[in-house]
Image 1 (tube, rainbow, N blue to C red):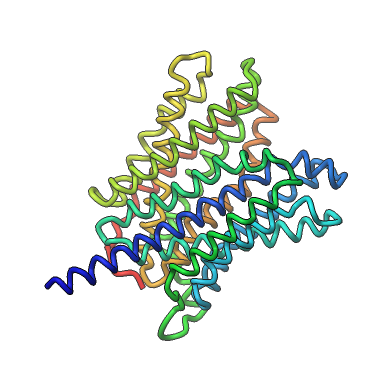
Image 2 (cartoon, rainbow, N blue to C red):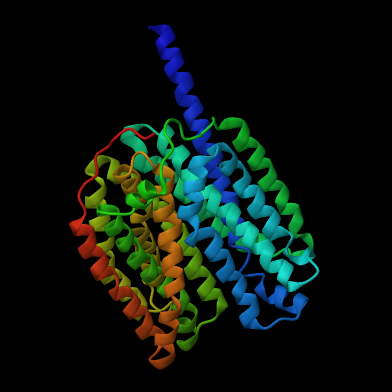
Length: 390
């Protein structure tokens, strides 16, 4: 009996170490990704290109890190997942910390693309490790902690960027250290047994998983649309960069905490009830937030509530997708993490176009309206079975 308990404790410690390692990888990977936008003015000045050219880098990074993530997740299932989890933050770090050290702009585009591939490989592999080693009754909580690692990294990324292009390569050492740690801790993750055909992979994206993805795209587009319009709305109301920065920081911190609560509640009360409640309950608060400003005492507390509520469904959606496709948790994770965010990112320019012909506030309210069909879809979703992951 004592020997069995000792083995069980050892397995639990190893599972925790794996989760901590890939969560650290998620933190530094997303911190690297968040450096790109703040560094765009410096990159424009260094390479002497237009604003359109330098913003093209964001499109390249979004394509290789998010839109292509399901394909990278499939590739990650065909090779040892251990390499994808370790090489992810290493490639992302090298690509985005060396941006000021390539001789011409075309090489910079390739460097950013490579960094995006690193991020695209890491996310499905990291999420799969967390899913496969988490206790079945705490899958939502573990997934939310993994998600919070990435959110925390995105908040820190602009701080890294503040050191400037010349000193940025020092931060690549953090990614290298995390890569070594991850490779040392994680077990081999090669897909065992029969080879899976491309037709079977295509079959993963069907049924309730398609509806879950559509729900996530609408929710993501609503959140992205608000974030994109926020600076314009606050400037139009007489506020400046300080208020914008505080608002986005509070929103990001709330997103991380909301995800943890959402994941834990989904373990207790079910995945779909939390998805429905998180999206539907956000709508009136979100509308009040868009119509208010930092001049109102409730603006920052309301920002926290909205950030926590609208993002509480993110890790829950990932776990739901994994339980819909328990044989392919990496691919299911990539569909919810990368493909949904990437697809929403490709559509967010429509919010800007609407703002040009109306106003930023009107465009933000139109983005908010997307939460209504998102909530309707959430009510159509069946509760997944808590199957064993492979």
